[in-house]
Image 1 (tube, helix red, strand yellow):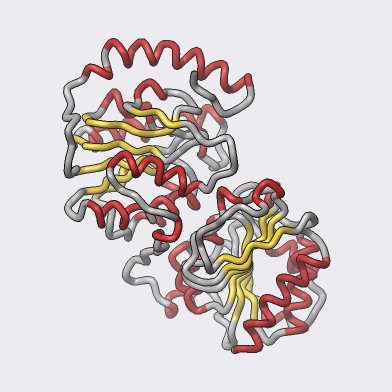
Image 2 (tube, rainbow, N blue to C red):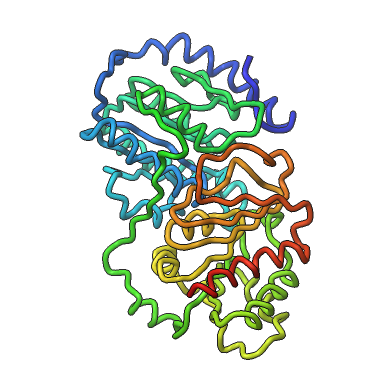
Length: 392
């Protein structure tokens, strides 16, 4: 019996929908003509209709797939808001866009999001129908699965998670463990079905920056500091994950007092300005607010030259730790989203179920603190930065 994810109000419609989907799948879809003896796949469709963090980490699968199958073509099904992550990726043959209404964070009504979902689906179908896919893999195990495309395309084998409905369209349905798990463990579960194996230690994070993005062009938008700098990202995709402006102001005050660093505030909302209004230490000419002024690729270039990034559980954490040392603070989240980093990460969290779990990335130091907005956490952040400051 399938285990669904969500409240009864959410899961009852899934059960009703799946009753009819299962009938259709058994009578029609599962009887489609297909090649069940794929040895060396020619083209794979990977679906990831989530947010920027998912968009980045799912690309870490691609080198593993290409290592096993050097000649395979990878098509990616993604939302348009993740275009910046995927546009310069050398492993993707085609990116096809569908804006799933469940993960759409635009300031639209629910009905407008559903209309956009349908419109982008209609635009994607002709592109999807151009190819025969040996494998379909959907990495989403919460909301916004893409299984609804399967009856409309040619695919030999389809793998994904069934806990948000439409599992009857999959050739093999997966459920998530009842214990804590890392999201990349779920990716490996799916990859194993196509003959690709590995562990967290095998993952090599990367981010491709398009040609034409340069420090000189960034300087036309913002004034870059002449001294070593830190990058501060006080925003997260969920407001409940964010720390108070008062806490960040205290951290910034102490960093200005105890280090020589300049600080770049990064974000898309007015939160940075709220924090700056509470910062009391002068001189503030060591602070630059880049919020809303630079794009993802420019953030990556700045991170590559930064001494440190201070982040939350969010896309900037996963991006910055590819390029520089990172301090990340998790409020209410834990092990599933621990970062896969190139550079050392000090991760501070208050997620008790994640305490003591093995994490096979040697450059990530994990510290549990029950109270996140506390003097102890502030000291951990300041001490981490000061240790680097001494060596520089």
